[in-house]
Length: 444
Image (cartoon, rainbow, N blue to C red; front, side, top):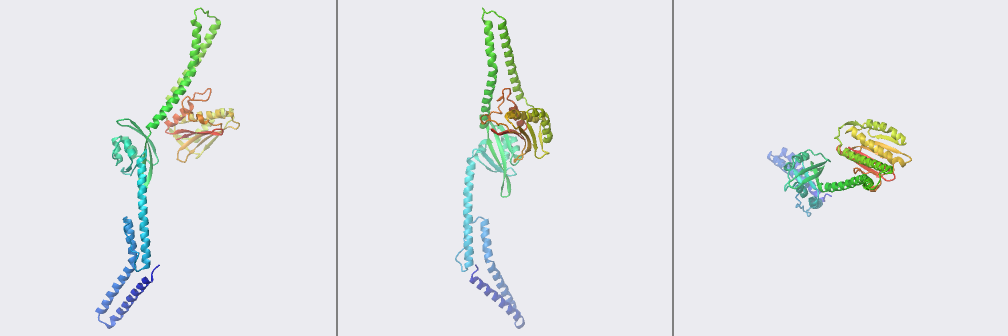
């Protein structure tokens, strides 16, 4: 609210300016020339002072914002002037000044708090700009790279030139695996990137995680599981051979024993079993060799609509014999992937065969072969069936080589399929709800 005093002073100044202007007009006729000139100068001075008076508040506000801009919060405006409106304005500006000051203090405290969290994080974190200057790096990332100071990504050339090139060409939201050897050990890293905007400048945020220990644990666990399966398979084959060999040896080890037709027949039967078990062992070894010798993918652009139709044609007889309905779903219909057609076809045929076997106990048998793009922008192929699902207790074992729940299965189909997808730079994932459905997804 503007005070009466302000109005009074404003009116007085305007009256004085008006009176001076009138006197100056009349003085041109009745007085010497120096008198109207003097009045004109007085008029100009009065107008200048009026403008200054009117701009007094604007100057005060401009001064206030200038101090805020310079982060000078010591500025205080008097709240005890002769103008009540000015007192109110000064009071509000002082409040805003204190509020901004308190907010700045809180922001700095929070910034220190978050920086301390980042410093104590067990993963390496660093940010750098488009020129490679590192603005922040915590102790963990320095420890991983064994560097006391890290102010530019070019310093990482000291560790490995490829690491510098990787960071230099790293794109937002990429995930990269990198390993290098230092004086003590081999270091295996996962690098994840994202972008943040700071003062209108884009920065690259990179999280660096040392996964060697996790990989070692998983590798050991995988070896233990594989050895268990191999031991189980080999022992199942060797045990009958050993038992029958001992029995046959007994026949011919007894010196007083007369070899008759019955013993000959038993010997032949025993040798037949030994031959069959030996053949099974040879097949097992051959399967193991196949698992270890998957060729590198010969990639090309594949139209999934054409591929799906081929798969349906190849499986038509088996689908018809087992009364299974195979449905094709593709969004968009023109979807393509860059892959080895032979290898991907083999994976899909294997998954569909598994689905057909799983549906043997179902009344309504449905398999869906789907293709699309997920929320992450990844292309995928999915094989779905409405079968009994996979029991939860064996979900973590189905991709182990030679693990099988089938009487006549080799146990390498899913592990081969997973390895094919890994060679493609993708993955094979499974989701299953016992008693309802199962789906295997090839993620490219």
